[in-house]
Length: 185
Image 1 (cartoon, helix red, strand yellow):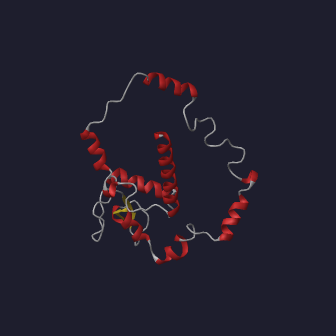
Image 2 (cartoon, rainbow, N blue to C red):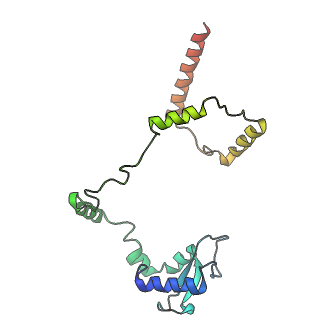
Image 3 (cartoon, helix red, strand yellow):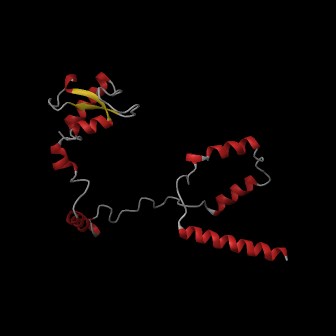
């Protein structure tokens, strides 16, 4: 039975109404320590019907593994994930010009403000902030910020600059030193 079919939806609505939302994994061999999502799952040997014994509660991971039969893998599972080049070309051709469902429709962002604030809005923000100064950061605050970005919490942790990036940084540093030396004279 397909996921979106009316009978499927009615049975799952009935399960939730009578037995509540799935709130635990009933798989004894579940390997997840603290799963966050649970689902009502139809047992393979039963039909879709309004009977509690036809269903069990599983976490999302166990549900996917339970449904992942060889037939599903071979026939259905990969066809929608990796369509062939010919299929992709057919889909693209089928949606050219006025055949595209979005043809003639306004874009999703038409009439919406995108990007920076309007000039008038920026002036309002600027005038409201005039004369106000942020209090200086305390040593305790600076230490807290520093500790929060150390080690694995640092966004650059485990990464390295490319040779091109290092070359650019070196060049920028040399220029900054030249300007600094010129200002000393």
